[in-house]
Image (cartoon, rainbow, N blue to C red):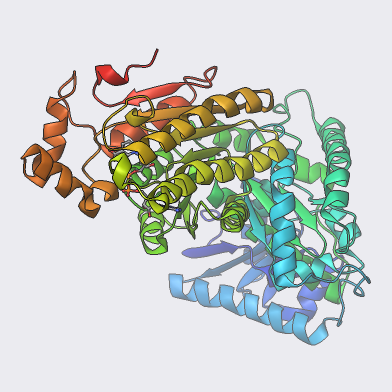
Length: 568
Ligand SMILES: NC(=O)c1ccc[n+]([C@@H]2O[C@H](COP(=O)([O-])OP(=O)(O)OC[C@H]3O[C@@H](n4cnc5c(N)ncnc54)[C@H](O)[C@@H]3O)[C@@H](O)[C@H]2O)c1
């Protein structure tokens, strides 16, 4: 189109107001009423060479025109300069917006249906978090997906109205939108007042019906040379009173799918306000969705990274070993919930990893049951669920038995034993609801097996964590959830535990400078090498990146070789 249309600059756009006219049943007439002869109607044609020729011919026949409305699709504007093409595009968009505002009816989506009004914010967020893992499992039946949640006014208003179901059924029209949103969403046909249990019971039935419907769409339209069916799960799930759940192969794609469905809602509202929404036909949608060129584009996509679509929650990820693990998971394509008692540190790590499309920060005290539930809910709302949990939060108060207070004992047991138990329990609930398996990794310690001196509380709690690994591996195996542990030792650099005064004391004990402590520990190992936080992160990746898929209940030492801590 850009080279066929006889103008130095040609802009092609998908603005809501333009597509509203393009998808109105009497769009041609409305275009004339809205623009006179300044903007011309081009009947629907699948994007490609012939559409370019059509637009070129129309421009030639209408020298006064600044652009056109492309039926069922979008707008094109032209100009002698880039600025002029842009100004013409904006004129089309704004004139259409004003026309819709002037002429549009008050309630284009019909009346509010009693019982379908938006729930209050806190209630709907809690409900969204409770149902999101199950919805993500449904959206991931063919291949794992990451999720995004939207409860903006535009979405909630659409979900509360009389025409929700028939309009959703008609599906999205703009090709560039429905390639991301799928041709139609899955609508939960229950009021906002339905309980979580009712929604969870209804979802599998709706999923089965959605898949059958999509298979029917494929079967009705596919020809002998059509590409194979690409997956029959919904990309958009609408839950009245709660909001919209959108899905994609990564967070950015999931978010953009949601943004495009918001565009679709705006388009339907605009079209219904002045006419009847009339998207392109099912057959045409199919021809675009399964177009050979689209297939070729998909085939050229780079291979996904090993942890793509996996959502990790790493506790104590604001510092040291946890921070290195979060960075490794993100580098391997995963999404990360950076959970830490210290929110500033967690936020800094999340920002460094690339912000909300990759990582979110959450403040949590892992020893607090309500805080752990809230942290999981925050992670679920951010990405749709959780697949990989690393119980890493911890602290060390090394003292001989006679100096160890009950407070010392309780603090370490609360954070590392109780904290890991709570995080594992809440994460397992989410993983079981998703039915996508999962990984739980415990950052235990060499001290879980090595009876070092002056360390009763810390070493005992590390042994507790190590046994949680075995117990949960046995219990969660039937759900496809693997539970493994890592036993690091002597990770000085980057560790807050060592920096917090403990390192200085150990250095004094051994008669070395604090900055040489890592090297000093290294000398005591079989390999003679210093252990860094990144080495522990490497072990987490080895356990979860796909190569050890049949392994559960294992502990990996990351200590450069400490014979006294060999596992047997
Ligand atoms: N550094 C080592 O040599 C070593 C060796 C073996 C095991 N480990 C274990 O590795 C883990 C990480 O240690 P590190 O050396 O990176 O320490 P670190 O101090 O750098 O990191 C620990 C993080 O846990 C967070 N945290 C503490 N209490 C918390 C709570 N109640 N809730 C949430 N977050 C909390 C801290 O804010 C901190 O960000 C710990 O479990 C530790 O026992 C460390």
